Length: 340
Image (tube, rainbow, N blue to C red; front, side, top):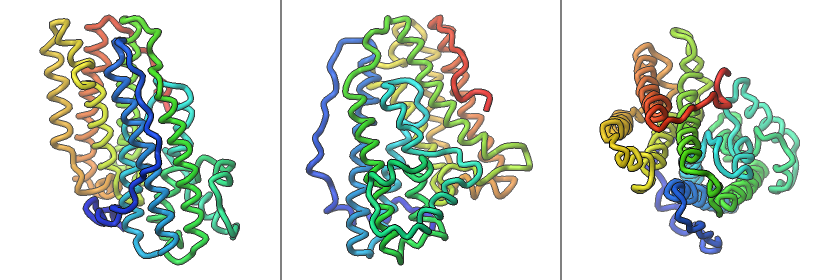
């Protein structure tokens, strides 16, 4: 089943939360404040979207009439996660939740095997507490995607499977709330301007590097792509996810006029700032979303299309990781995703 963004929008009208307590961001005059506010907003949005996913799943389990609404809210939750995905900078409590939220890359279809094993247990009542003790492969967004989209899932016909999905979404909502609360305070207040420059560039570089690996792993060797390494291949939303990654990175870079773009211009580096901004816009405006990454890798033409997108991200990475770092006198070391 291929996902289409426009479907079932009206089905969610009555499922918006009115009980969530909204956290307020910490207000400071620190140089990192603009970026912090972007991160705070992203964490709050992710928590809200997953909370609504739990509500929609619960409604489906009661009525079993509108799976389209579940898939739509799953996609919204996944999209909101793209702003936080691949982070290696920020509150440790938030970073520790990454694998619980999403297990990827799934090189050996561990998610599929673990989910099938859970269904074979024939457990009468699943709860969030049960899921929290399971493998991370069945706790997050990938597990829910498997339930909604995989042909081996009997979500449409088995009420117990629906209860499993509800339990997974409830556990995910708890983890998302942990992330949101971790961003309640700015983790960078002790950093000097120089240290913040280094931290900020690393923040952008780490997330961009993660996005690049979402293309390079499936691309693999020329002529021998590994399409099943694609993120969200079951729902066909891998390229849409990546577009959201890039849009979120652009927002982090700009930080509502308080980010790296403004800092470069203040240092008389407007030409470099313009090139980065233009590269973001070029990448976003020409990003293909009509087909999934899995579909594109089925043909030579599609492979070339994906490779062209990778080159755009590589150019963006060079501008930030190399040119900006040089201009600001920052030395960026290897990150945790290098060399795998």
